[in-house]
Length: 368
Image (tube, rainbow, N blue to C red):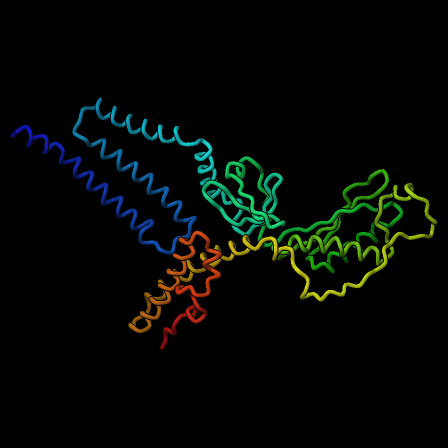
């Protein structure tokens, strides 16, 4: 009986440490994840990683206080290490590498949802960022899932949402004054709607001069349409001023009278502007929606924080209730966007009961 009592007493530190570790982990979960309903996917993922690390740390502390010998304790710690190593070893190395690459992409943040990116031979807009792959939507409306390891091992070219440079390159003969060409190309860029256009002479070739006209496009979403429009404006402007765009060897391919000018006749565009389809509207519908969802989630988080901060200064119960209702509606909407497998469909659901209406975006008058 005395030996049993001694054994029970020796386990008291372990039991106390186990209880303390469990309470600490529960409290950490409530602080990091459970009590934070306005977390987006990016912030929730990082906190989940912290919880995994804290769990392993708590397990290690409990092992260290076990009332066993030093050699047995070392063997138990080694066994735990072997179990963890076995899980990693039997798991697919591709899965682990893609997971680690996904973590690295979230730390470095080379791009965000809605950005135009080029990775290797692939170009499109980011429509989804997962733990194991990154999905982009191409200009032909195809969805390409790129493994995160591919995104890490290849250079990523991202177009800034604040604006990008649009360029067009062409070659013209030495018989045309380069100053005239530069002025015409800048005029074409202005007509196209580019800001602060400029022209560079790239090469003095054996038969032609290579020019490049560039300008700032402030709305990056229209990148493909504006690039095509720039090419058309260059053609129209140069042809309108009698400048032929052709290879200097063109005259060697056929006989032509010296005064014959190879400029196509000008045709009038009879289609109204409101009937012209935009390539970006058709091709990048999912990327557009994904970007809208991300922006809405960020806006909801900011509104919840502002409303919670404002509610601290409200004294009247009626205004507090109004403020709390507004907060709960935003939290419900945020929870729906985070938990719905396809938030694009949820956003299109007009019967959504937790959608935040325009009337809820206002803050009650605190002076009344």
